[in-house]
Length: 139
Image 1 (cartoon, helix red, strand yellow):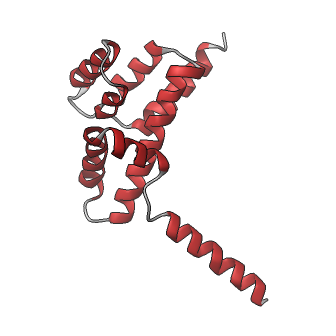
Image 2 (cartoon, rainbow, N blue to C red):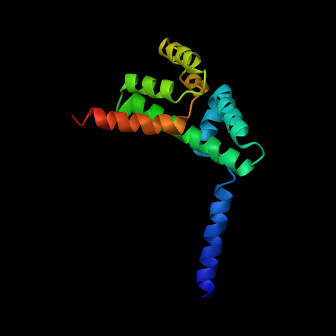
Image 3 (cartoon, rainbow, N blue to C red):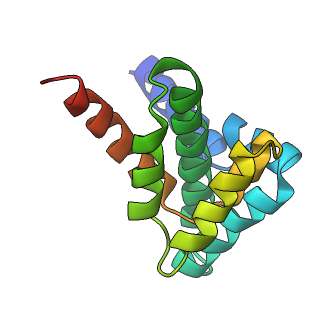
């Protein structure tokens, strides 16, 4: 019985400790694109205010999804038009043209990390991209 309680306590501590740090993707973006990190962070703060746990969770999930979808676009699936459509569809209100400017500058040779300044819901861009790529290959 003591062993089971110890295991449960250890798991709870591990979950609590891991939930208080930036994810590896968030750390990469923070280090290489402070402007991109600040865009994601600011949106999380606007959404969650002083709920610091949810701010951190949102930063981590948005950073993870942004890295995931860009990895898919650049390597595995390489369907750029679906990426653009997903970004435009899931752009923050009124930010569609701004986001297209960022994408165009990135294609024009800007640093890879400028893409993280796009103002969108990266989780939904990832979801949309994966679903559209899968559907496009199904018929």
